[in-house]
Length: 418
Image (cartoon, rainbow, N blue to C red; front, side, top):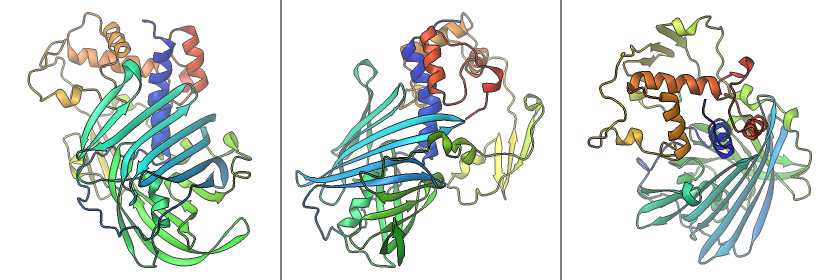
């Protein structure tokens, strides 16, 4: 097996297994969505109040009553609009491992909290993910990485969106009334997701936070397929939020928020969110057909064409999967010569899909050798990934393997798929 550099090991293993897991688990990556189907004219009222001076808020983050992190949120007037900064510190238990995550989101918005530009950074151990962008002439210009790893993408937008971290401040600038509905075009930079979010002011009710009683507005909505509820005081400031994957945030203070993080003492986030089946398949590689009863998927927003293919079908809570017959040879030989644009969208690099990365290309060539049959080469690549990449978010294990300058096959007990 060929060698892999330290940077290659740590980025590609953790970048896929841990960074992706983190984005999914806290509700930031439910489905990659670009900018089709978003309302063309955001139907919300103009701001009534302005924020005239810098404000900073602290929040504690809980996972089923276990404290796993905290966040700070800053806003200040800037060039006729606002500068917003959100920092999140998390200490998560992922498959028995204590994993720290830090994210920093900075954005410039106009006086209606519509996005002008942003930068997003996420760090976990040796892994750093960077994303920045700006609105220009009806396009969102997005850039990831630095130096020779820099990637750019230009995306057409149908309307100027809001950024997710600015949502709380939006309500500070407006009068809130029970029964009203807000339709907001929200953009989340960590996932490149842009969807209209509908939030209803459901009720006004008493709420107590650390011994202080409030007459709070309760707001309810759907964000990226997840139900969310949050409570605001009469000034529009956030008191409490509930929603994604059992995570709850509560208003706190600079002194209280960073204290007593439980980390590995908390419940395992993987175990909480894993979709478990009621039996083990003894020899899955020999199956040609699988029939599953899946509960709780009725409200999932999955396009019908995703299910209704030749290989799988979902109807009335029953998922059927048929094994495809793999041909012995492909319709072309390697290296593939692109003729036209038919295959281009499948081959082009994208965010977190680095098909043009030099190290990935070189390793793929070592694995395929002189084989020119795309079918057998695909099998070789699949088996190499399955055998050699540990399928769990292991920051320390990755570092140890990187120090060796090679990637050994994982232990047989470390093959749980995330």
